[in-house]
Structures are given as C-alpha cells and as structure tokens.
Length: 320
Image 1 (cartoon, helix red, strand yellow):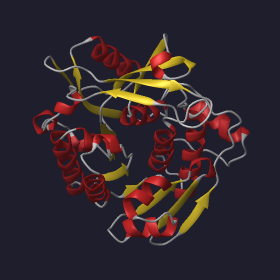
Image 2 (tube, rainbow, N blue to C red):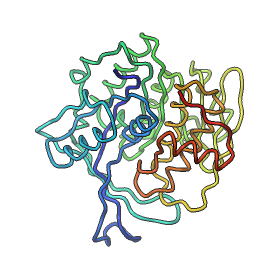
Image 3 (cartoon, rainbow, N blue to C red):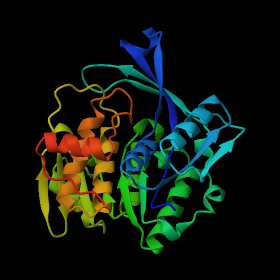
C-alpha cells in the first residue's frame, strides 16, 4: 500500500572529505542525494508508506541507489532500470561557511528519460498525497510531461498535492521559462513551499505577504515561505503567522534543509497536527538536517524527532 507518492532523480553523491575547491580534493565519501529522495526517506523514517518514481541506469550507482531505497523502506515498485543511460551523480564540497559548491553529472541520465509510459501502472487507490518539486520539470521535457500527468490525475482524484519550488536555474534554458513553468505547477498544487529568495525570483517581490498572495490568488490553499534560520511564514485565505526557527549551534551542511522542512510539514499534516504544529515540526527537521554532512543522514525517526523537539521546548509532538 502506498500512502505518499513522489518522483525525482536520485543521484550518487561524493562529498569532499576536506575543505577546498573540488578540483583539489583527493578523497570523497559516497552518499545518496536528490531532493525528492530526501523527502521520501524522511517520510519513511517517520513511519509513512512512500512510493518513489524514478529511472536508474543499469550501473553500480543505480544498484547502490536502489539498495539504499530498499534499506530505507521506500516502495520501489515504480523504479525502473535503463540499460542505455547512466545514473547521475554529483560532487559536493565541504565548507563551514555558507552553502557548499555542488557540481552535477546528470545530463542525459536515465532519470531524464522518464516517460509517460513509465507511470501508466500506478495504483492510485491508496495514494493520499503527491509531493512534487520543481527539479524534474527542468531535467527534461519528458519528465515535465510526467509531472503534469501525475498532478492532473491527483487533482481529479482529490489527492492532496504539495509542491516545493526547488529552483535549479542551471538546468533551465532561461529564467523566463523557469518562472513560467514553476508557477504553472505551483498553481496546480494545494500547498506551495518556496524559499524567500525563490519567492523573489518567481514573483518579483521579497515581501512575504506579496509572495503568499500571488499563489493564494491563483488557487493555492496554503503557502509556507521558508526563511532559513529565521523560520517560516505561513498564509492561507483565513490566517497568517510566523514560526520561529530552531537554533543550531554549528551548521555542518545546509543542503537538504528545505527537504527536511517539507518532511516535517507534510508528515505533521498527515498525522493530524495543526498547520502551526506541522510547520514547527518542519523547522525542527530542517535544523536537524543541517547538523549532518550528507543530504539525508540527519533526517530523524519518530523518537529522535520527539527527543529533539522536547529538548528545545517547541511544544508537544503528536504521533499516530
């Protein structure tokens, strides 16, 4: 049974073992990366049943990723293998200040060849939530078609859709195309999760109310704007409020924080928390994510999350 469905491109990640330019590094540690795979793993660790849609190459990276998904209790029935294309991978620098340098090897990857025929057998009867990010729409036109198809089916069936804008300008032909497609996808969603800087690119404003109203006026039910360590701003047609972030003494790596935030919000809503409590949970998991070097090794299970939130006096955590 699949409660939550998501799709994307998981990649092998080689994280530098020392600081410095990537061209200088001689040793790396291998992880699995990808915004949507981070989301899937985070949800599974909190006890949700998640199915992940992707295409992997028949190569060592593809086998490594597939095994990793299985080890993390991800439903891989919609993972297919492509003998003609490779699995993407990336290099990431180590830094103690700001965001790390990331270099991708993903053009013409197996995942970029995901097509409508690959998603024709989805069992929608048990799906309650579809989570989408803006990344696959940039990877290829065929991936974009898959996203539009899945969102259309989910909308028709009354399935809740969350959309994390996750801008990757380097993957798009132009900023104009990126803004048009991302906003079009956002307007087809129930919940939109832009970062404040992404909101400025997508709406032309860095005012949280202006950003939120742009999407609410387009039919979105809830907008949550991520403000980094400052927390988040939440707005619906009936209410708006800020939620403080959790203090992190030492940030190890910022990549994956937004995915962790999405995990907290969606898992909270799925388990019956109020919108405010769900966003507090999102802020907690985002904080935990930046304390670890990999993109998803900091995502907690239920007990770890409960202990962290109680230790930081951010209210009670409710679980099913």
